[in-house]
Structures are given as structure tokens and as C-alpha cells.
Amino acid sequence: MLTYQLDRQAGDPLYAQLYRGVRNDIESGALLAGQRLPSKRSLANHLGLSVITVEGAYAQLVAEGYIEARPRCGFFVCAGGESGILRCRESTAYGGGVGGASKPRRRCAEGGVAFAGERRSEPRDEVSFPISAGKGGTESRLNAGTETGLAPGRS
Image 1 (cartoon, helix red, strand yellow):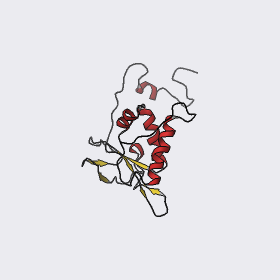
Image 2 (image 1 turned 180 degrees about the vertical axis):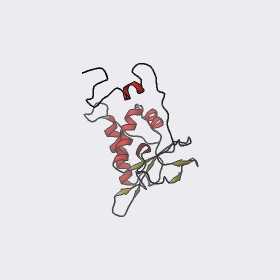
Image 3 (image 1 turned 60 degrees about the vertical axis):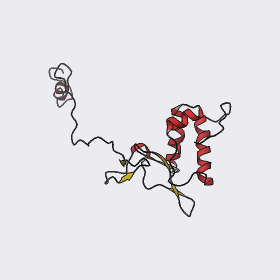
Image 4 (image 1 turned 90 degrees about the horizontal axis):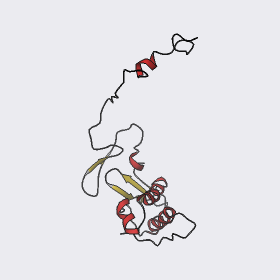
């Protein structure tokens, strides 16, 4: 488990201190490419922090390319190139896949299969929303305008 000395009295927020600790471990090689990081909840419990604090640190690490988020799998250290620039296979920060391109399959550390940016439930082609037919419903709002933009009967 990752352990860091965080100073609650320091001027820096706790998430920034945690971010720097993890970043330094990645840059020094203490955390290796492909290594799975602890879950937000388990790291928060271990360090006595809130999950939101750990989430903030992880989000910054994802944004800067140090780690990647794999939906339903966790957070993993990105591979470093010869130039020292860290690179992830693709941007999957919090389920955000790339455009509408086909979504690659990846095996999680637990052996499960995840699709970048998708949930495990079956995708739906259409979404339905209930429409109220009463006063102020969608139908009355759609038919309310005229060429002048005023409702019928008003001048």
C-alpha cells in the first residue's frame, strides 16, 4: 500500500501533497508502468483522507498522463518512453473514450473485460423520456409559438 506523510497544517491542499507523492514515485521508478494503484476508497482509508481528496489527486495524475483510469478496473501507471514522457494507450480519464471510434477491449487486473468509456450494461440505440400531456407539457410548449414568437391569442 502506498504511504505518504501528509501535513494537514501545510499551506498546500492534501490532494496536491498526495498528487506530488504519487508523481514522484512514478518519476523515480518506485511505481512501474502498468502497475495498478490502490482504489480511491482503500487509499483514502489507509491514509485517513476523504475519497474526494484521493479522487482529486488521481484526477490530476490522469490529466497529466501519469496514470490512466480503466473503467471498472482501476487506475494504472502509464508507460514511460525513452524521452521520459509518460504515455497512456489512449485517454480514458473517468470513462472518456476518444470520439466515436471503436472502443478497444482491455483486460483488467482481475481478469474482467472492460470497454473504454462504456458501462457493462447493453448499449441502447434510443432513449425515451416521459412526456406529460398536462398544462405546460412538451406538446403545449412546442405548439405555443407563432411567427412573432408570441403564444396564440396574445398581441
